[in-house]
Amino acid sequence: DAGITQSPRHKVTETGTPVTLRCHQTENHRYMYWYRQDPGHGLRLIHYSYGVKDTDKGEVSDGYSVSRSKTEDFLLTLESATSSQTSVYFCAISASGGNTIYFGEGSWLTVV
Amino acid sequence: AQTVTQSQPEMSVQEAETVTLSCTYDTSESDYYLFWYKQPPSRQMILVIRQEAYKQQNATENRFSVNFQKAAKSFSLKISDSQLGDAAMYFCAYRASTQGGSEKLVFGKGTKLTVNP
Image 1: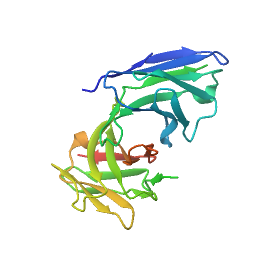
Image 2: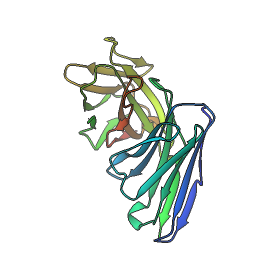
Image 3: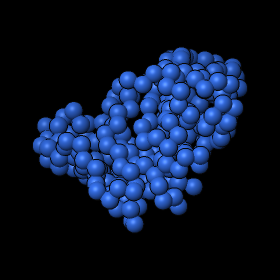
C-alpha cells in the first residue's frame, strides 16, 4: 500500500472555528489533491498541488486554503468552518505523468 | 476544462448477469488516463481498471472490461458475472498525462450499483 495518511480521521467542530486537515505521504510524489465527497456530487476537487509551494484551485475552493511547505505534507485549512463544509475529505497523490493514483482513507468532518 | 459525466445515478443487476456503466468525458488533450474506481460502504477508493488514451486496445481485468471510444469520448465499464461483492459506488475519472501540464484528476458523480441475489 502507498504511504499516504490523513489526519484527523474524524473531527467534530463548531461553526466559525478554524480547522486544518493534514495529508502526509512517504512516496515523494509531485501531485497532491484534496477532494470533498458529498451525496449526489461525487468527488469534487478543492485544491491541488504540483510541487512545494505550487498550488491551484479546484472547482469548490471557496472557503478553503491550502499549503505545501514540503513535499510530503499538504494541508487543507477551513479558516472559519460552516455547516456546508460538513463532508468527507479525501487526499490523493500521484507521480507526474503517472497512471497510478493513491487515496487516503478519508477524513470525516462535522461542523455543528 | 475537463469534465466527466456519469449519466446513470443508479443501476441494478442480477447476480451472475452482466451490467454496463456509462461514462463520457470532455477534454482537448490527446494524452490522458481514464479510470474506474469502486467505493464500497467503507469509503475506500479501489482502482478497478485504467486505460491509457494512446492504447487502442480496451483494458480488461478479470470480470471487468472497458469499451473505450476515443473519438466519442466514451469510457464504459462492463462487469461480467456480477457478484454480490460488486455492489458499490463506481466512479469514472480522468487525468491528463502531460508532464508539467495541468494534471488535475477529475471525477464523475458516480453510479450506485446494486446486485440482486
